[in-house]
Length: 284
Image 1 (tube, helix red, strand yellow):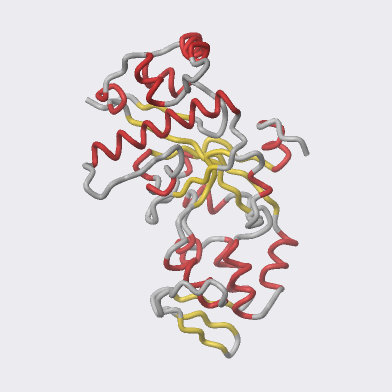
Image 2 (cartoon, one colour):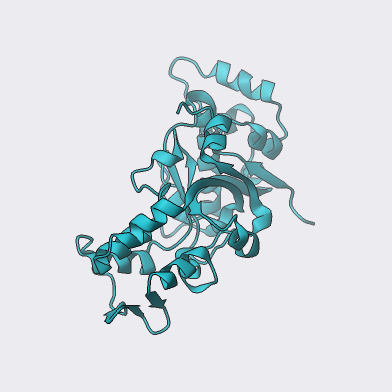
């Protein structure tokens, strides 16, 4: 028998996920908050104890989480309709606006041959990233070998203000323009593309363990898969309660597993910057 699906919207202070997961009413959860006074803290442990939830109840349903992904596009989302959200390696390899743009700029990235060709240059990208992030080639290797998964936000006071300026262009284009000593590779994209914020849902298993990295979350190598899953779900309860008690403005990143793409049917909303700021009540 298929497990019931529950969607936790961690991008807002919505309690629907908690209510659906444990068959609770919002009023009962507000009652829990009223009891958490003095030295009592509203967290996953106190929540589980207050509602007398078993470990089996915490683990019993299929959990989906929402995230906000910031992107810049100019093809009216044709590629997203076709491929969904994809990681950097797929964005370079498939027929996407990023791949087409690089070819227009005379940049050919061959992931099989492990080379970048630009004009009369052929750059070897077969070497392993060595940790020296100050060198342009190492920043490229880092993106292609380590940091190529889909990155997003569980929550933020404003995703368009992230230091990486992903609201202007993919970080990879900045790294590439530095490597090839051609500012136009970055700047022409900025001039000809607009920012959108994509809200999507994904199964809890599709998120990297690095996504669950706050509220004293700690995974021991000797833990069983069930124990790790239980901790992840407690982290979600913590985050949901934290959003309700203190707001959802704290910056929490989410990261998909390397091989994961987000199919179009799991995309909940595509916002313009103005639409996003209105929906999340962000002051301009």
